[in-house]
Length: 389
Image (cartoon, rainbow, N blue to C red):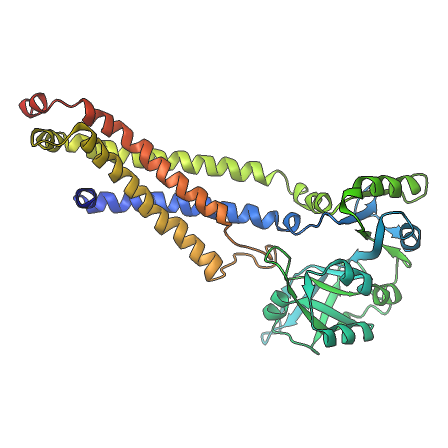
C-alpha cells in the first residue's frame, strides 16, 4: 500500500490533474442524477391509493363542480376533493421601486377532503382550525414560508395570471397554516387555499374545477374505479380521463421531453471521458516505469505483485477522485442544501444510489485503466527490459 501511495505522488502535477479531471466528471454525473431525481420528485411522492380525474382532452380544460357528487358514490371511492391550478405570481416590492417576482405552485382545493387525502402535509391542530375558519386563508409549505420570510398571520398577495378577480384587484391571502412534509420526497413548496374563495371571486368559469382527486379504499381497485368513472362521463360534454397519481404527475415531465434519455446519454459520455483520461495517465506512467518494473522483478517481486501495484495505483486515483467529486457534490447539495433553482426544483438532492453508482464507476474506471500497463508488466522480461535501456 505504501508503494502505491509513493508512486501516486512521484509526479504530483500529473496525478493531481488526473484526479481533478476525473473528480469533475464524477461531480457532473452526480449533478445529472440529482437533476433527474428532481424532475421525478412529483412521481416519487405519488400514492397508489390516489387517482386523478381530468378532462379527456387536456388538463387545461375544466370539469363541472357537480362531478364531485357524482363520483363520490362509486364503489371503491373513499373520498373526493376537487382542485384547480391557480398559477398566481408572488410580487414583492423592492426599495428601488422594482418588483421581485417569485413563483411557487399554488392551487385552489376543497380544503377538508384534500388534507384528508394528503396526510403527508403535517400541521398542528390549531393551525388546521384557523385555516378552516378563514375563507381567504391559505396553507404554505415550510420551504416557501422560509423563502418568502413569512410566518403565520402574514399576508400573501398573488397576481392572477390565469384567473382574473371580478374587481381586477390582486388576490390576497392570509397564512393560517404552514405544513411540514412527513417525507423527504413530498413537495415542501406548495400553497393551497379554499376553492370556494376562488369560485366566489373569479370573474370567469364559475362552478368549474380543473381536476378531481379520488381517495381509494383499496389501492388494488384503481383500474376498475378509473374505468367506471370514465364510462360514466364518456358521452357528456365534459368527458374525463382518470389515471393514478403517478401517471398524472408524469404528464408534466413528458411535456418537457425525454430528460431521462438525455441525462443518461450525457452521463455515458462523462463516464467514457473519465475512462480515457485515467487510461491515458496510467499508460504514460507505465511506459515511464519500464526499467523500474524490471528492477522490481529482478529483486524478487512476483508478476502478480507488480501487476497489483499498477492496478492499485489506478484504482486509488479513481477513489481519490470519487471522494473529491462525488463526496464534494453530495456535501454541497445534501448537507449544505445548495439548490440551483429552488422555484423549479422544490426537492433537490443527490440520491444515495447515485453516490454508490459513482463509487462503482470510479473503481471500475481505475480497474480498467490499470489493466493495460498491468498486463504489460506481467509480460515484461527483466533481463530484456534492462538490456534495452
